[in-house]
Amino acid sequence: MISLLFFVRLLMMKEISVFFPAYNEEGNIKNVIEKACSVLEKLGFKNWEIIVVNDGSVDKTSEIVRKISDKDSRIRLINHETNRGYGAALKTGFYNSSYSWIAFTDSDGQFDFSEINNFIRKQKETNADLVIGFYKKRQESKFKIITSKIWELVVFVLFGLKVKDIDCGFKLISKKVIDSIPKLESERGAFISSELLIKAKKKGFKIVEIPVSHFPRRKGKATGRDIRVIVRSFYDLFRLWFKML
Ligand SMILES: Nc1nc2c(ncn2[C@@H]2O[C@H](COP(=O)(O)OP(=O)(O)O)[C@@H](O)[C@H]2O)c(=O)[nH]1
Ligand SMILES: [Mg+2]
Image (cartoon, rainbow, N blue to C red; front, side, top):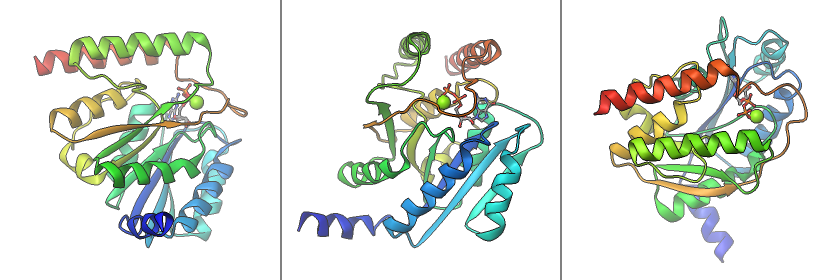
């Protein structure tokens, strides 16, 4: 009975855009797309699309995605000519998504996309506008975990925003939220998630959190803690703070 009810409610979310920011993910992207396709088919969405935002990769990411998208019009490739950064990749994904719900995860295989089911269930239970993940156990170095916590403390002090893992790369967001924030600014740094949540909260959208699994990166190289990413993230953070003062 409960599962029947859940199925009926699931049908209420009829359409979804899913996007993957990708920078040099030739070892991961095919699996990530195939897994997402099979999950979306299983969940029975009437309309869905997958967008890969290739952020100026210099490996074979673009060719691999092109081969897949040539065979299925629901899968789209958007290329940045050069590498612009994680924030820019997310913005391209947000502003090119067609459907009323938008989900994204990293394209490095560190998340299990089938957990989108939990996000949808949580959205139905709470009627939230944003369902954001937090790591059950983050599979990263102590350095990364500690720097993230320092970052979250600064965001809390400056903006009063408190969530468990601000930058967790698995989120489900209503398109209403994105439509109401047409000018996300963050490009190079990692400020984008904080910027989105700060602005969404200010507009009164409902944010809820759920635990997600996280796996070690098996292929490719993480670049999320390069020095220019860190510097740019703090620059963007203080710039928004000054603006909002
Ligand atoms: N680091 C980084 N990741 C990008 C960029 N553009 C897109 N991405 C994607 O963003 C996701 C997170 O990147 P990753 O380096 O694994 O960051 P981390 O998991 O925080 O260390 C991956 O799917 C990347 O392919 C970029 O310029 N830099
Ligand atoms: Mg990663």
